[in-house]
Length: 391
Ligand SMILES: Cc1cc2nc3c(=O)[nH]c(=O)nc-3n(C[C@H](O)[C@H](O)[C@H](O)COP(=O)(O)OP(=O)(O)OC[C@H]3O[C@@H](n4cnc5c(N)ncnc54)[C@H](O)[C@@H]3O)c2cc1C
Image (tube, rainbow, N blue to C red):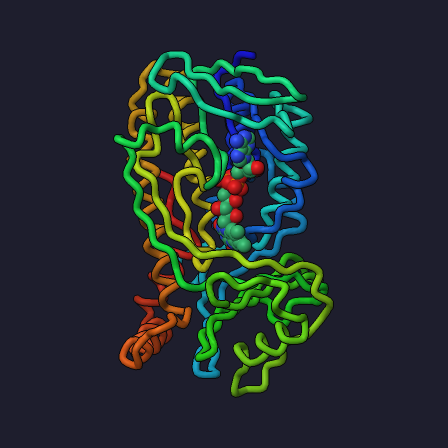
């Protein structure tokens, strides 16, 4: 097989890249190791930055999002049993975010790709990227019980944190920046209308909690839990009781309970691999970087990377210049590090760190008080939450 761009992975990064390239008249083939049902069911992100919404619209992939997505103009910070709303449009000249699940973004992009785009092969596992430094890189992959080779002009590794692309960059040229956290998130999906119409980020002595939603009838809720927690150790009643305590307010706000349909634990990690390009191999999304989910940035960063790649390749096709492709890693990393900073700040602002001293706990409350009493501090949070520009 031969194509212009070989894309490994059909998560949001790979699927959107295939769509952007199709729209620019550039051929691609997507290889995805899992089956379609698995990819469409994998519960993950749910918050789309303004820039991500704009990109999906411009790509012709937003019809259902515009019908079913929920535009959110703010979030609530909760601490000391008090509530404080951050008003995004008022602080950012009209910007907002969209609540629309990653599963739905993927379903929409898969349907479009299968209908209009180039080949998207499910259960096609990339085994290795070879010849990244040559003019003709290729991907060795297994499909329908046979090994095959996809020859490309460029390979884009959109295969997530555990994929084969990043290891194809020689170790001597790689630098990794990493931090793990001594806690994770126990996340549940519940068939109950969200108890608040915007996301609630709660700081509490017992640990962090987040109220989010997938639709007007499905709540998504998270609890900070110690690293290594097994979701099955928590009964549904224990989960609701803990959520009630962490969300409690002085004004009598109530959390509605409902049947829990899914629960899982997500570890928290910050990770950046530099550079994001080696020869004709480009890394995008979680293949190159991970953020803890507190800032809701992972999916949005993946979108930023593939927009940068598609723009650079289109420029090369139109002008013959590789200037933008050569700048890919540097361009992406500017946004990536801003998102890493914001995600780290939100995580350390809101979680209870095991072993934190009373002094550190007071500082955390002082940081929260600063955000809720200074328009400048609030604006800083609102700008970062609604998203950094795609440059
Ligand atoms: C619980 C949770 C909550 C989150 N919440 C948010 C949020 O609110 N907002 C936000 O922006 N982000 C959030 N994120 C992060 C977000 O989900 C990820 O950043 C996003 O999925 C990255 O997309 P990707 O396409 O780069 O990688 P992935 O979605 O991981 O996709 C990679 C794809 O590559 C495939 N693959 C892997 N190896 C191979 C191989 N060898 N051959 C072929 N295919 C392969 C995988 O099967 C997968 O389909 C959250 C993540 C989690 C876990």
